[in-house]
Image (cartoon, rainbow, N blue to C red; front, side, top):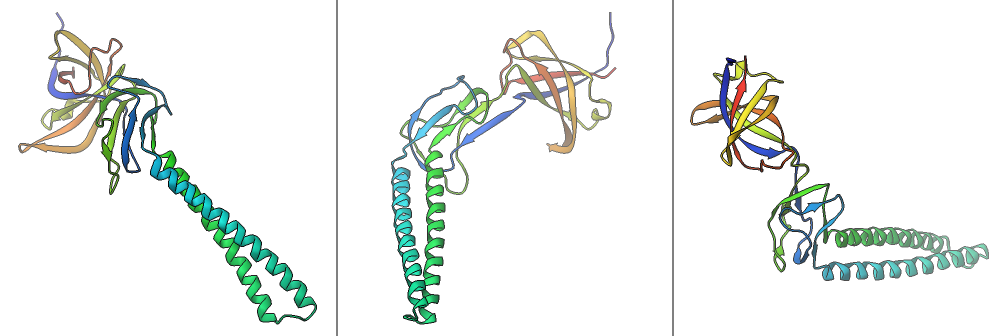
Length: 245
């Protein structure tokens, strides 16, 4: 039979791309529209936070913008009237300067209120949690009624794997063996869930960053794996045999 030289290592199966979906705003989870193993598409609504507080902020910002627009209209009329009176020498130059400054301040105030309204509307939009891309929900960390507190960092609500038909094994190869590992080498591996079946892959990348565990240096080796039958699941431990010769 065939004789081959192999390096044995262990690693965990991971999706090729995995997105952690969080929340930029704080609030109470009002509705959850997906669950574990749900297939989602880009832009699909995953959850809804209580929007009442943010809707009130939008209404307040709209009212402040309307007030600023009214102030701008008044300042513009005063400016026009001051110019007419100045042409007839009925007001002093300082009054003209005051009217011009009031008009400029009113215009700036309108811009400030527009930006405040835009910010309030964006905060309201963020109460709707959407999928960043196509994939499958592999983790859900919240339930209806739970409070989400987005203070210093965005809390993780969902974890989405983009495509489970293609996966990676992150295997740790010791420094004594890493010199024989190269990209493109064939890999045979087994997992505990299917001990009597050999799966195949290939070395995609050998990373140079050292990992020290129990005073032993390892190097992370990425192995590409095809998973058309979805028998392999994220997090499974794989016993990897890299065929070096």
